Amino acid sequence: MNDFFKLTASDVDFYYGDFKALKNVSLNFIEKEVMALIGPSGCGKSTFLRCINRMNDLISGTRVDGSIVLDNVDIYNDRIDVVNLRKKVGMVFQKPNPFPKSIFENVAYGLRVNGIRDKNAIAGMVEKSLIQAALFDEVKDRLKDSALGLSGGQQQRLCIARALAVEPEILLMDEPASALDPIATQKIEELIHQLKKDYTIIIVTHNMQQAARVSDKTAFFYMGELVEVNKTDTLFTKPEKIQTEEYITGRFG
Image (cartoon, rainbow, N blue to C red):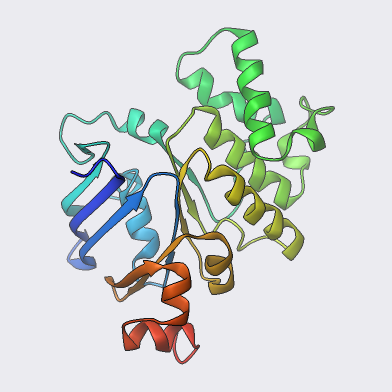
């Protein structure tokens, strides 16, 4: 595999029982780039995203064929430690889902789960992660307060900090701003620009303007198939496939 690619999906099929939700998807992800996955509801983009950290394993009756290779290792190999994989591949969900704990403990949670006990090390990592998530200045005086008291946008940045604390290499974002107001959305988008200096980011979004603003490349999914992938500017201005053009011009979806 070309070392240029951080992640390579090859001929991925995915089944929910007998229903084939993904059909022969092949896609390469370059390190420290943002890839947006777009397409109408139910087209398979979130299913594909969850294949990358094996979140779909938690759903009974599902099956994956094909391969997804991260750093030259197939993540569906029987010997893969899924807990370790999810440490490498962090995820931020559509709705902010902070734990009913303090702001500090939300970020520290993954560190403790991974066996880190040194209080100074934990405190340092919590601060670093909150700074990376552009939240530290807003919460530094209330780290012991409940995370549930934060605004929606702050909660989502806290969830990003929580994902960053265990030092992942890839960050998956499943519509991270869809539940947020425009100002909070802008902060998340600015944050994505900052984070791509250090992380490979894959974002599912329904918002095509958002995909255009934050991503280097965009992949268009339709009915479980990858229709087209290209540099974002090219895909939005000169799509190669008629389906892509019809979707981005609002004729369907």
